[in-house]
Image (cartoon, rainbow, N blue to C red; front, side, top):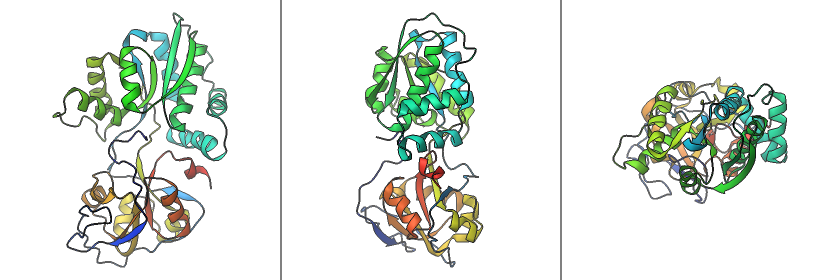
Length: 331
């Protein structure tokens, strides 16, 4: 299970659905947003490399990597060690870590050690009170690698560390509250939404396009369940929209505003999971925030091999990916 709650992966068979002014239902059997794509649009352009279009109007929320810590296990030295990781981590480096593991087939431990060495993470860390610390990680490679990085930093701060890959958030978050695990690499907006729903299902979504707001709300929610947090990194793993580099160059499209202004129209094919047309962080959000109108929607997957292959083969113009995908650095 990926970390996102706002858009879950789909397994529907690939199909192309024309979106008419009446908002015909897509192949998922749900209502697609109405399309008024009157322009020519931008036909797909095949290519081997992918590029994420800048979300210049901030459609997506701030899913920045942030250390989540059981309050009883916390100490100033522990938080300082994790904060040093956060200070060194940005989205470009997270993409490189994912490329090392997912494409270059290095182990998460090896990729973590290279990151820690290159970024001088362990030098100068103050020794904490020591004792056993268990770092939990979710069941996907990016989070496992981040867990290994946290483990190396905490070892240098004097702790005896075990890194344990546990499963999805429904499994590891209660374990973090109980103290069965002590630290988890988390994603600010998604965890805030998760905790809010757990504490009060009727509460307003606490996540925001502003990182400070998201972290403030997350901190308040964490206090209710015995969690504290280190500093949020600049690394984000969130929904994003990619084209081939060749498409971006041909149509001079660098941002989602560029896409809306230059490529709304019949020839433009948007690809993503079956639920994308209805999701506020996918096609519906592109319509609402950017006034982007695709000519067609192709039902594929959520940032997976179907979407990336369709982009590279030139069967879709733009597709939903995850912003830290290692394929974005693969060239």
